[in-house]
Length: 115
Length: 111
Image (cartoon, rainbow over all chains, first blue to last red; front, side, top):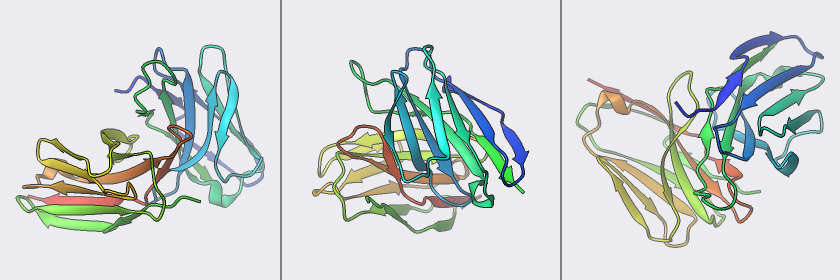
């Protein structure tokens, strides 16, 4: 139990649709990162949010966007879904500054299937 | 672009055997982390190594960070079925904990 919760756990969409994934970070954490993990591969960094602003971004197109709310929870939005977007989407919370240990605490992920 | 390559990709061994997993890059990382991920769950941090040449031990697991901070290894002694899972290395650059993950090593330990 990492204290990071993600919803939904599973969902199925069709090409061209839009999806919103949600993440509640661990209590006391102020930073949320999102990763995409395709089947049989390691996670790939999508972006990170700190103080409600995007703090860094990986090699993902603009149709991947996000939000962080004042309570540090976060959303990942993907527009115009493509078949290759099928993956496990992982949210990780961490504490930046002060007692930052660099450790990420991952949720169990949201498994998205695009048909 | 920083890349991390893990080897082997798959490893199936008998209980009691030893094994080593390698994580290599041409880039320097400020720190390197090892995670273990089980089916249906997110990765869980095992260890963070920060200093070149650093060696950390966690029970039967030994982690080493290369002198140049470009590579790392994970050695498991006397593997047990409970060690089965996906082992991931991840490097952090100077921008903090925006991690670059390797492709993972899927370990199966048979009783």
